[in-house]
Image (cartoon, rainbow, N blue to C red; front, side):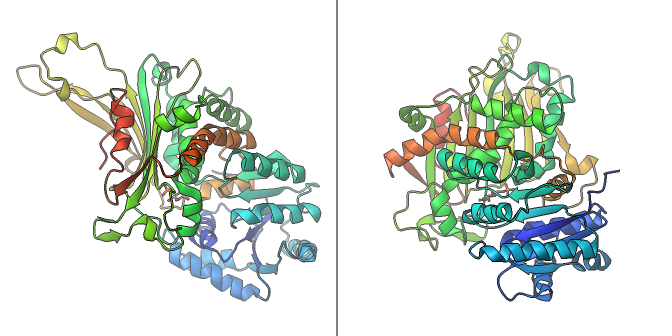
Length: 497
Ligand code: BG6
């Protein structure tokens, strides 16, 4: 039985935006349906001038009806929406924040939600700091007997310097324990399961090191192109959009040392520590150990994908990458000499997210007569997409009189063992924030360690301009050059699809 969070107000900046509609409101509905919202609870949407509470309710309702992950129970909908309130506030108009504070005080008294406030910043990143500063100035982030928490969406900065500056400014206004930096990858069951797999099973941890592991591949491939996000994506690119956050979450959970306790401090410290140990590369090394690509027109199934350069709001001649592959090394005893190969891209042939741990080959003298290409590689593969699975690949004897070998697999599918209600992935994260558990949120040092590791690639690519950018056809496996990153080490990417 999960505990109920304290009474609180859930205050959303960017309440009429896409993120709120697509993820936040459907997640709140799923929590309500599971009876996991506080008994006294109120959703407050921060609005532009002149938006009434009824209009706010309608807007959120539209989002829920469009993006709900399961059939709606109207009684739950009524309960969730009954208290929706609209309050006007604009960081460009500081007095509006004083008025907002007074409105919230009154609302809390009327509804008995106490003074606990969760501020959810579902806004473009440029608004993070101005909003936080106004919340700070008006005393709304002071915890006097009630908690005050701030949820921030990625991106946390656009490089190491801006991430440091953002963290430093936020920490002038509030304490680290009040900041919940969300990465939706940490809401995925299989991602959370990486820690359980490693540390709750005696058989994996003894072989989880350079003595037994040859290398690790982390793949996040997407079929979708950039679509209507041309402006954002052109300024961001695949590396910033995916690597220091999502791919590094996967990497740090796989590579971290065992924490002494399963609590936010220990787990987040170990995650930050292993990211800090990623080898810093010179510009030359960074170019040698990276491949960046950009998609050209192509077809994925029945969908025509247009050239990235023709996407609305993408600058003519843009050199922004839509694909990146990297080779990283971790400088510590566990991982010395074990490469981590990372790849992610848009408009590819498959939707696939996986961490593949490749074990070292067994000494094969006794099977000398078996063609090497008949021997399967030993992989442990943890996937979150297209389905949540954990799979072990090994060799087995083909039935019959002679010793012939073939690769087989053992597969654990989440859905086969557990009842999994379709969810947005935000439910756990929002619930954890309401109960004050920040184990699944990023701490400032972890964010900065991530940017530190990718900064050499950003610098090297800025110096190189468009040189080295590899075109690839939409619907393909990505640029050919990404294969060379592994073949030159005598390895190859796992075949997907
Ligand atoms: C987001 C990125 O953070 O993650 C998107 O901004 C990307 O560009 C998305 O498509 C991928 O998430 P998922 O859960 O589909 O792998």
